[in-house]
Length: 219
Length: 219
DNA sequence: CCCTAATCGATAAAATTTTACCCTTTAAAG
DNA sequence: CTTTAAAGGGTAAAATTTTATCGATTAGGG
Image (cartoon, rainbow over all chains, first blue to last red; front, side, top):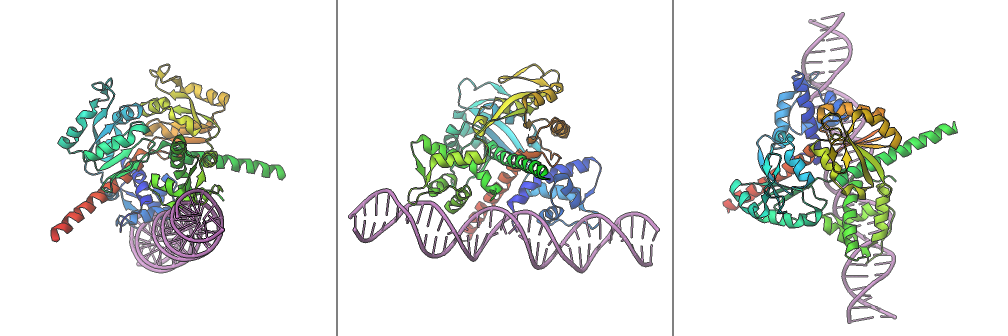
């Protein structure tokens, strides 16, 4: 009944293609079509979609509007959640300025930092707030999600503080594996992990080419 | 023989813990210990490590130095690869300024943008270069990896250009699924994907709590 | 109105990944 | 020197995820 994580990870890509198709004036899209756009297996796309319960029409495909709404709903992106950022460094600032989160139902409402010289400065449309004001801000604005963009060394301390303030979901950009109580959810977005996969795939690919080269030599 | 992708994704975390342990003066670390730090199953950690061929000592664990070296090597992080960034917006600038890539064997050597007003400006320690100079730069410096941080609408065009210039690995931060020839590797780092998982997990967690609450009510 | 081909949907097979089990090794304590 | 318990390692089972197969449906052309 619950949707597999790999499927959930593909959902945002589906949404992108669905929006594209919609902009092009289409009303229906087939799994085959979606798969082509994303370099996936059509059967897999159908399976993913079937987990939403939505049915398609043979020879036509799926109703774009219906599918979009359903996926958006499953992801919980249909009603906006307020979030704050802790860490006004390069990455934190970049995220604060990024305006694409709206379509994920995420609204950044404040950014915090502990460095005295940063407090009061402007980052995008925000004024950097002090860590002392964090607790009160979370309580008064009923913030459930926090984005951590502090250096690894401070990440756990910041995390502990956030949990104590009642934060329930943490999006962690620090290269550090945070420990949290059972009731809190952490998702780490790690550049290293992503790059690791690229490194290995590239290494393999380059080795393949070498193999081909030597194969050719042998002919 | 080839190492599973999920294992590769865990390797960077292992490296982090290994470095921590090393800094604390340890020489050996057990799979149990690693697993605890990362919230993983010890058996899984052993399995991951076994794919490197490294053997541990019962009652002691694995040689931290040996393991570090091996994982670093498998990831190809032991010799530095030069890379360039295309797109000097918020994210591109943040990445250009980030100094943590050195430990991934990645060295950003230049940043490019097509906006005339950005060319010549300074981003971190780089001067933004024009797209016209891209081809020559790649050829002269034998660049194999490029980081794409342009808006989604331009990503495919930039990608095509990079491929034509001989780039073999692309790290794509644009929310767009790029089409490339067989010989090129693309890895997408997508904030949306990461956030999708957080959203769903958090939603589920909050629902669980609700369930518990209502269960309690029934007692 | 009938055929054709594209597509869906359900079930099952295959592949991959995680976890369990059990035996061996060995540091450390007694 | 012996016992104990904390690992490691190999094999196999379980779980998850992906892919294949095949029949059913239906838009569109003839």
